[in-house]
Image (tube, rainbow, N blue to C red; front, side, top):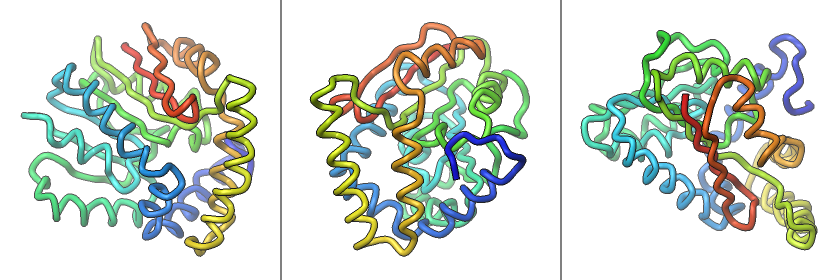
Length: 238
């Protein structure tokens, strides 16, 4: 399966099945593969969001709901998390129950490219490690733009490839050895992590992705590289 292919609904179906298959182990392997850095990056999203003080927020491709749960701690903010994988959402729902955040966070099955919400509805939209899985990248981003209210904010956390040649070399060696080994040890679905690795390398990160955001209508795109550029936070306004 090639990232961002546009062949009917095949990619969506494969993504749904893939994340269903790794839903139980996903949080553990994510922590192992990023040395827990993903938690710090997600907290960075929360710090940015706090400055916005949203009254309602949408977390797209919410997965097991880490970002949605963080946003649920913002005073007077109602959060909706959507994902195509029901099994990932079930893991997230267990977290919501344990953290007693059911009054501020709810999870729903949903397609990032066909959101059911009204135009100009949310103050904030977040997407963590999800945009590279969109079947149609531009369509998904246009949907995020549509549901944001005027002057609303989009925050995206996504993998990227370091631009520095030396760091990029070490990054390539690391990802091509460490990640497959960890997947082999801990995962029942090795092919899922091969896909995630390949999609990360092929995703148009940095300035290229900033230009795509601008092409669908977003303005003032801020790029925040993390861990030598192995992941990036993008902040854009409508």
